[in-house]
Amino acid sequence: MKPIRTITAALVLAAGAAVFAAAPAYAEDSVLVPIPLPDGFSDQKCEELDSGKSEEGGLGETEDISAPAGQVITMVCVKAGDENSDAGVEYYMVEPPTNTVTITHSTGKDISHYSFSYEPEPTTPPTTPPATTPPVTTPPVETTPPAGGGGDGGVTLAETGFENGWLAFVGIGALAVGAAIAVPRMVAKRR
Image (tube, rainbow, N blue to C red; front, side):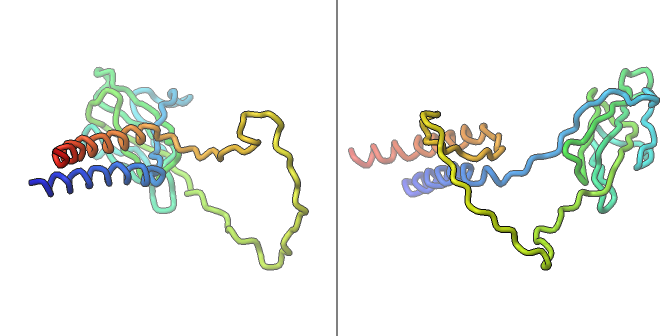
């Protein structure tokens, strides 16, 4: 039984370390941002956007929709219930635009129909310059760190944009659980 407890503690500690190490690898999901009813659009049914209006019926509370190949979804309309159920149309912008998105109606009722707009998927420009362009050389620029400053000698860290602060708490929690399993074992061994 003692080796199992030690192995469990090691696995929990390793999981905590893995959470810290893998955190920056997670990609940010697209978000549906509610927008007001566009001018001239009906508040009773979705307009036929680029996808046309889906009326296949039997849709549940959520629906996964996908743009055609090479396209990304930019705006979505969702309708649930009927005219008497206060479940009118809702329009959303997709930030950032994506190929596939899961839609729901804010009332939680089953979706009666939907439509969405799409546009060509953004392309990335080539990363290498043409072979005929000679490299541009510039003389090095000498900089002097600000005097006094914030105590860092003029050196600042790069802004990474990583905003998953919750991940630190998960990692610390995993480390604490591992320690709670391992410490009694070590104390018992010394007795």
